[in-house]
Length: 491
Image: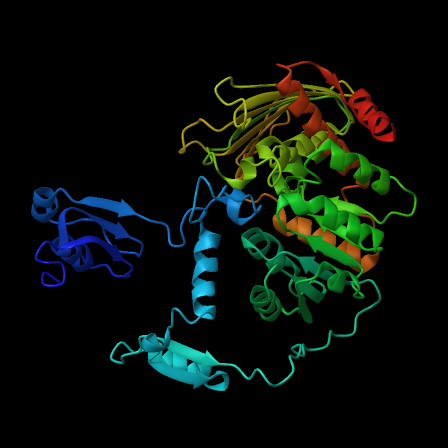
């Protein structure tokens, strides 16, 4: 290298290795000239001995794998490109240039290929790669491009009563942890849909679905009487409306929709006489502590104080994006609005809310007030700036001389003349009971525990709270707020 560079060292070294060793960084420092650059693209540790880098005054840079745009949701997911006059080589332009060079044969990978395998021998190829004793620099799988493409043959669904099987859209971490395990074995599982074929097939095999799909129309054309939707927030309203119009009953993970522009047509559909029922994923209603409180404090107006220590999310988290996640008020606080409504047993008539001035965009820390038709009131305090060691949820319900306290869905205590003993258990936010109810309702053709109107009420209240926050805490009457939007949509 010294001979190649005339004894000065190279201008720059690009490291694309993946290792826990410091050798690549140390070697790069040795190879560089004074004031040279070391660019790390691969996955290597950045610690190094000071002597070489100090004496040469080297510059150490980190680079994302594909160039500008990598890990930028606006670029990678929404397709918002960087102007070429500002950023010449973006992630996509880098790949375009590489593909163009391959096509013109100005660049060839032939010298990097050490082994070739027919696709039928793919296992042998991977075994070779995993064998560190083998010199497998580049391994190529050769596909049969002459034979026509075919669709994999999935096992046929077991015979089920018409309308008693279900299909599921989405198999991410939430569905995998809280929904699918409780549905497996409880209902006939017809079709699972994800955005990628391999994840759909993995979920099909893991949970016992008859089919896998990546197209919602394929799933909705099936015989399943109900559809579970557990996709990202921005797809909820479009997919739910499509499923309802196809005559399917729907279980939809919250939120119902992300804006009043989506709410108005959704409300019109859900209130139409022939619309199937929709159940929003308000699992806390089904928690055993909530069921116990509901049974003991029925019939009287109540005052509710609900504190949520939500914790902070990074500013660029997808939940904060109003177009994708809707923000934490719309995307998560609807849970707490619904639970207060369920406990009060009455319709929300007015709301108000205020957010911390330091977080006007994300609405991460706010207080919300609800008033109900039967005189009940609720205060929801949603904090993202609290201590991590504080349990997440604390709920007080005061009514008729009796107070109930639910502590993070692990303990229930009553205070008053009929207090009884404290009840303790493992944390249970109601997911299992929620899915059990859903399965039984589908099997028996019974109504869901959460009605279309209740789903609309909780959703409308969150949008009214958002509007109140934006105006500095104005009291908003929910019926009037909804009427204004419906009237504007007609005009």
